[in-house]
Image 1 (cartoon, rainbow, N blue to C red):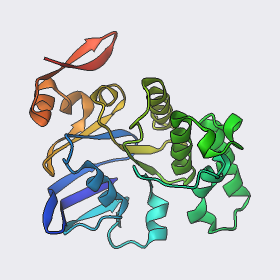
Image 2 (cartoon, rainbow, N blue to C red):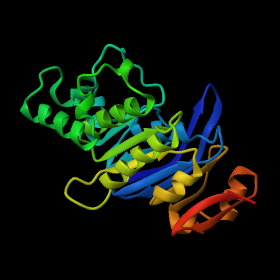
Image 3 (spheres, rainbow, N blue to C red):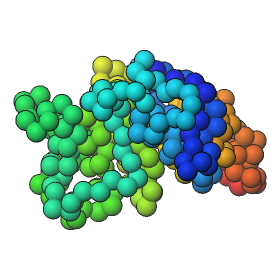
Image 4 (cartoon, rainbow, N blue to C red):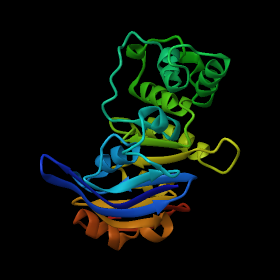
Length: 253
């Protein structure tokens, strides 16, 4: 379970998050939505324990993330940030292998190699395993980064705008894979993802956390929390949800 209790965050004296309290359990995809500057990335980094709250607490599976040591945090959450930077000379296999660092600290064992193989298989990266990152398309490269986070073998995957700059085909490919991984089963993972594309949130999210001006607007199951009225207020423009071919679609009104 992720639990935030009265969390506020300030940077250089400016409020970024204000009195955020919410909780949700494992399983499924939780989408963080809201306009630019709402505090979505800051909230994700606070959950990861990389941003310490000015006040309040963040707990993941009972662990106080602001007080936890990095190895403890690494067993609970895997964070894929917007600004991941690695050398282009790395191969896909090398990159995915970085996800195991918190387990082997430079001395990989059979279990680590097996997890890398599984990640390459699950994200359909075997044909690209020996390719360098600078030889990949944007969609292939982002899929490799998500595979690296998955290989960390944590119950929670925290993804900060992983679909930015991806075309619709590659965005759908990644979301289809994440959706499958978060369904009930022995290998189920839980995903918290920052999304700007409301259509993607409407199609894939199980839960919605909506932020505006650093404050929580609403949180809960998507079918209850994501309404045209809420979205219109959140973004300051007319939006509606329509059912098209059995799926919710966000449209301007």
